[in-house]
Image 1 (cartoon, one colour):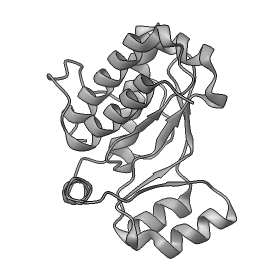
Image 2 (cartoon, rainbow, N blue to C red):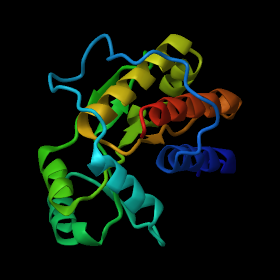
Image 3 (cartoon, rainbow, N blue to C red):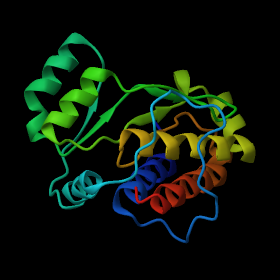
Image 4 (tube, rainbow, N blue to C red):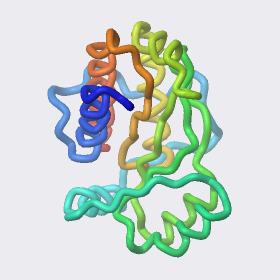
Length: 193
């Protein structure tokens, strides 16, 4: 079980990204990651992103569901997409150098599009490897790279934000994790996410 501060800071990161409450203003220049994760073109935020934000922020209660890519998950997603407020599919992971890997399965993107369902994918450290989290949280360059990737993917795929599912963090890395979440949220907000 995660310590209370980890659950709280992870929830804070999601709330900051979804609700637009990150403190301060971002200072980074807008740019694509130096090594693109795919060859799709980036799209500007549009009216559908604003509608998605209003849907998420106005939901009481918020029906946020996770998606695991298997036969049962696929059938359940199709059957219940209309009742969901927000979908958080698995499929992205981060390495110690801040490179973001993975993709959203095509069928998930299609079901979400047809249902008008906002997407906030999970970003995890593979196997909840503590050494990956520690290396990332102690390398500012890796964090900047990760934030650029998250911003790029959010714009490209019109995500409303990210769920930073970085688990098994060393309790000594608490401050570094909170700082990383704040910096990522500031960048997402600068990009109207």
